[in-house]
Image 1 (cartoon, rainbow, N blue to C red):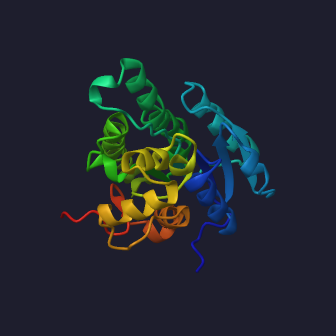
Image 2 (cartoon, one colour; image 1 turned 90 degrees about the vertical axis):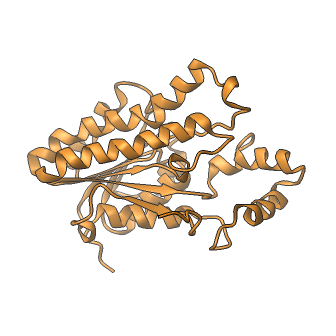
Length: 261
């Protein structure tokens, strides 16, 4: 199905792996052009697409957002879509062991990276009276995770950020929405010291056995972990004209694990 994204220009942060990389790939497949930012751009460069402009950037840097906006305008002449995706999730050993520096590092990326990036693209979108902002939050923004206290709080803040942006700017042509994934197997799971290693240590099991135990204990109706493709499809929908009457919403991509109204 034609999503109406051909010729559109998207900025994707945290694009070097997982959800960000798959979203970049799907935008390109839909005919969009993409400025894709990450600390490691090797996987992006391997895509080798004329419509792709990879940029090495640390979204904790205060100047990174303005630089990405300039890159998009210089290379492609416009900015239609922003997918705020760069983030960090560090497993913690209890609230009392999280330092001020830990909290600040999490919020600098997971919230302020989104704030700065939104602020950088909005003037151009408002001038053209059109634009779509999509922000990656998490199920933990609503359901706190004992291993991820600071991450959970930062994602709750993202939910309100999107509401604020939607309230102020929808009437001027710019929509803002959130995707909230849960239990998506990405590098945050699989990297050494990542969430999967934390689960294996908790269960006293191997890594793949830990996945099976987790699926049983987490009570996920779909019976599987999520895939980056699941989230990317939701992002493209919210960024497209098919979602023109949708703004200020949170789209949960979690296999049915959220069971409250």
